[in-house]
Figure 1 (cartoon, helix red, strand yellow):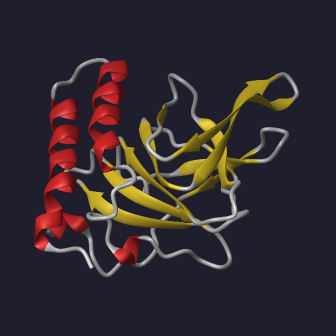
Figure 2: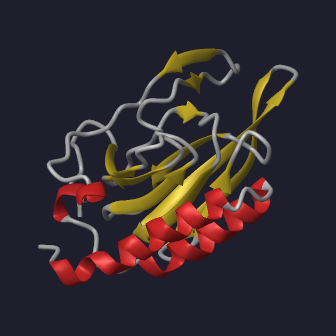
Length: 191
């Protein structure tokens, strides 16, 4: 169970996100600052509540950790059982991703003449971070390629559970969706 003393690392991260966003620098600088602030949280078991580590049997789970009252950023834990994948999707906003537990594979796509083209594949382990945005590449799918639970922490430039985005088929055909969140009995905003 997460205790009062365990809140400090997460609050430090949220303050760093707020500072990076309010600095109104270029996107690359904002992403770099948030990636640096996220790294100290990764792999630590003393701050992430058990409620935000639960896998689902049927698909990956997306739990809200923090949603800015201004709606300008959110932080989410993603939980994958072995073999679970997201569909190919975009975000329409910037995002920073850090691996908290396990191994996650990202397959990044680019739009080509005949649909989507696999651009690169990245296997990331605990402590590694990455970024997405419409400016640097925003279409990918992510999955757990290990035989153990995988958890990652994501920060987005908006309330990702309420933003209309797109899923894609291999030909690049888009379908609109809003991801929503898993029910979580605690939102760390209230900590």
